[in-house]
Length: 257
Image (cartoon, rainbow, N blue to C red; front, side):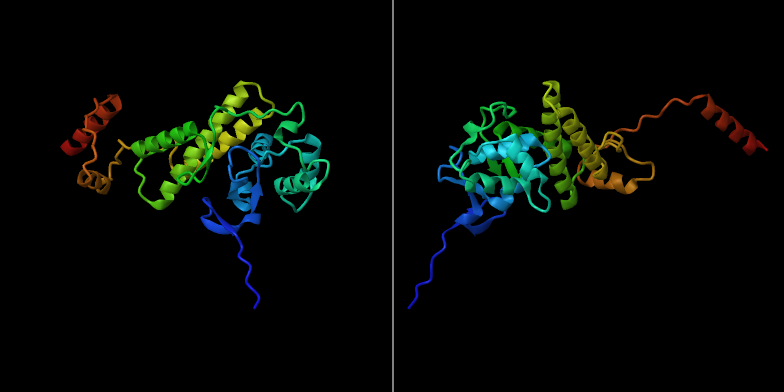
């Protein structure tokens, strides 16, 4: 009787699926004591922005693989393939790269990491790898959105989390731009446009009616706030200007006639 081969599996905390070990990237980085990346390869590359060289370098550093500009250029030029996946395959298969580590990268290769002394870990709440300071930023930003806006539906909750992450990314791009890092100005512009577009789509922008604004005909809004014990601003009559006084004057003449 042929015994069925037992395939060892590991659970990916991002997709929450049990996958064979060959679906996880190997890594000699101290971040992964078991010698394997915590995320499956599919989820891992989802966090890699191949248009952002810093994102590519960060991914390679986690896998403890070297970065070479020429080699990356060849991978990035191939049509129909994921550049990062192809780059990792070359590092692990070509003899001249097989035993090289991150420390063996091009001599001019640097990785710009804010708070580089902090290690990143996967956050189920935020669906990605973040440092403790990143999580603090995201939590505080989300808390502020809930304070400024009435967020009830699942769609708005999802938008709020994405906008918080977009704000974090924009802030990091801005810091890079201040430091004069090459290409940071374009990354900041793209990040800002993404943030603005998402904010307007979710109506979380500055020109959106605030929480203290109640439309003249919005009695339903007022009743809803009263039931939820939400503060309703006290009506303060405005002093009439000359135009208003003229309207009252002509109104009284019309009634007299």
